[in-house]
Length: 323
Ligand code: G4F
Image (cartoon, rainbow, N blue to C red; front, side, top):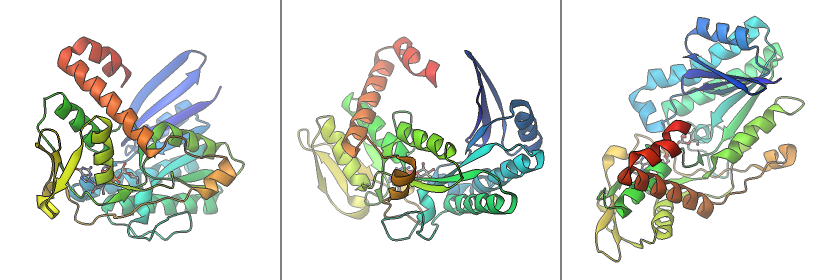
């Protein structure tokens, strides 16, 4: 029987897998007593630390909470495992945000130049992982994952915000999509493939650090265009800066607009990952390309919003019960 604990979004969601039984409990990662009791009880072989306030813009508004979950939370976990002599393998979720202003393409050797409290916190956790590895021989792998998306992405992250708004515009229940910076570029991959990479990291002989990315970068504007086009709505752009807008060609309606409210005090302009090390050592490579990812997310949101519009029972069956 393998036991794994997943620490997610500032809370502990842990899972004991034994036969057909799944036992879920919850606790707070920043509550050391709770952490120790969960570790004692589960005695996990593998721990996946995904806990964080993970929204970059929100980290400017809640810097202390963001730092406490992402950096101090990781430290509490590493130290609890050390004190208990637990010997579990730990996956530490780092982020491509750590590269910040560093030139692309970014890989494991690229310097970190953080542009947000969130990124600074993730860098602290990264260095603590390396230090606990060196000082105490602990088994901790840092996964530096570039943006990974799916229909389950939170609604305030840009990809999901776009596909959900598009579905609602198509169904006539929303007028327009309002965004911030249209020109930042991200290396967007499909989340389930990235979870497999996390698992592969913990199956290696020795702990190591890996960049996980597709090696393709697109702007937010390109994501918008690809999503609308896939849904059969052609956009034409006019204006510049805060006056830039996307006009739907067939109706002449302004459906995409820009608002300073969604801009960040400091932005990460260009992320493009080089996952060569993961390819060589883990045999990992992405399979879903940008267009397929956009299509999956648009299809799912159109389906979900139609269900919501036409009756909640079908919606609840498909989504709520599985969240
Ligand atoms: O979707 P985002 O909020 O993701 P971001 O900031 O790249 O961070 C995500 O990926 C990281 C991995 O590199 C994770 F570590 C992190 O936890 C998170 O999952 O924003 C993407 C880009 C940014 O440049 C942002 O300024 O989209 C731009 N953007 C433009 N308009 C917007 C919006 N982002 C959001 N969330 N909302 C907008 O209206």
